[in-house]
Amino acid sequence: MLMDGVQLMIIGMSVVFVFLILLVMLMTVMTSIVQRFSLRSSAAAAQERTAAVLAVVAARKNHS
Image (cartoon, rainbow, N blue to C red):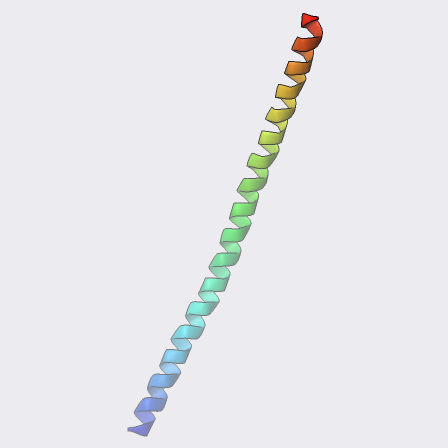
């Protein structure tokens, strides 16, 4: 009876350990994916914003 309890405890702790390792690995992968896409969209948005500001300045300069 005692050995069954120890065996169940070892199996349970192993399952939790494997789950936590997988969780950390998946979170690391997801973080790198999110950072990669957010940097691209951020850079693209900055370029669009710069182009829009330059267009407004050029239009204002040509208008006057």
